[in-house]
Image 1 (tube, rainbow, N blue to C red):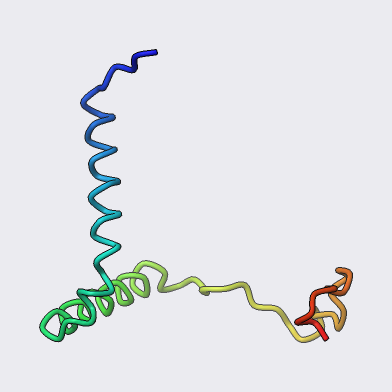
Image 2: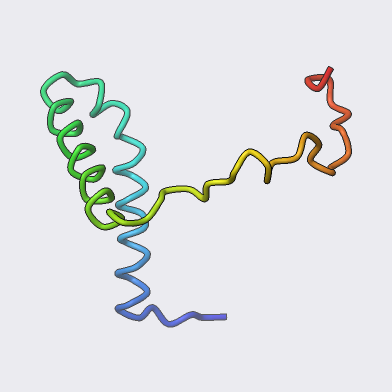
Length: 83
């Protein structure tokens, strides 16, 4: 079965491979001292952009204390961590 390689498929596959490669190297980049301020600056810009875009909206749904029940209705977990 032969699949025709289209330009769109080649570009999307290449972009996915390149982004995966870059993400794999992010830890090493963050640990390098010269790049840490640049990455922190990008994180701060992302944070401020989210705050600007969602200025009038709450980030999570808020509930009154009366809306929250003591039991969730789900059966108790039987894992060893639930003891």
